[in-house]
Length: 561
Image (cartoon, rainbow, N blue to C red; front, side, top):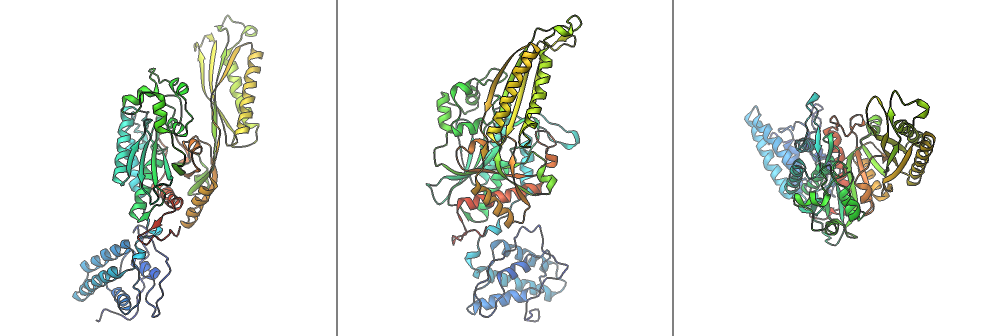
């Protein structure tokens, strides 16, 4: 009995808790012990030291077990802690310098098994047992990025081009479904190509807590936009399942079809169909560069249907089927990184009004056409681009933004006066009425410019979707989790377009943002660290757990978070 002291020995100062052990230090309240048996927090703190002192610690392990044998509750240890303790004791035994030390370590293993067998089942699972592996998510994102029509090896950057229903898009879909299967999720797909992975809840009649994003990518984009919200969401559900969480409302991950407008010049096709905003006339008018319609393209790869009505019916979300939607996404802006924050909690999602403006003049020879006689369509376009800038700045609000992102001039010869000009204009705001006032100003400016420059003009509205206000309940849940995890956070707006904009028409919706380097996105050097992704995934998982109203472990105890 020489190795056993009468009191527990704290780890030496040189043995700090390991940040990489993956075992959280639980601060659960101790059970009532009249004889003062070691408390849960003390035991787990001492057993998550980076270098477990195998020879000195067996004393209090056996004392704890002896105390339990005498009628007092043994200290509840989670399976993860027991496993960690066993590994470290075994390592101590292998490295023991003397037979006595080796014997002490062996005795400690027996004591550990005894304590584990008698441990309280109430400690079998806790929100703080949740482990999220950021490096694993990055490895999966890297694999997903290989399904691309382009590569860019400059300075190690990964360029991703993944267009709807192309071979690489279909390969990416197969990979996502494999990740869902590996996570133990039940998969279903609708005729639009939206892919769901489901973790059933105890209340089969309840609407789901849904998360997800997209995996299609514009030409020469990066590997994080959208994909983080799919791959990390699958990991979030897998982590909840592994930690013993029992959802009440079902939990679901969704990969949306065609968030990007690359192939059919229409964004958020899948979520628009889910919300019931698409019509056959509108979608059938959107043809790709080869003249192929969406229905034909979907049918060619195994989705689609006989008619657009069948397509829409398959995707439409019935009332009550989804109770909450929350989307994890890189910020695509510089605020979080600049302010040193971990999490952005989205309070509103801006929506664009897209305009197509045409000016038509008479053209002529660049040398022979005299300046006073010209009606230059190119100069009309240039003037309107400046008018867009002036109108957006004129609101005095930074949430109003305007972009003239496309200008096509013809005939496009250096020695020819521009005869035709076509502009693509994007005006966004979180305030729909303010945005629409800017749209009206731009239309009025186009008419004024056309009259002054003696050119003909037309203005058409491509789309003018309303912005979305996010759910206060979801924002509060995200904030509570961020505070509990000690993460720096703020509430903010999303100025980029997301499927969440249309999900807000179906169910209470919000988004969780993580930082991205320099705010860059839609380019090959788009980047977020494994640590940033891990934090966002952890917040997403515990937010979904809160919204699900589920429980941890066989006792059905509610999450401390």
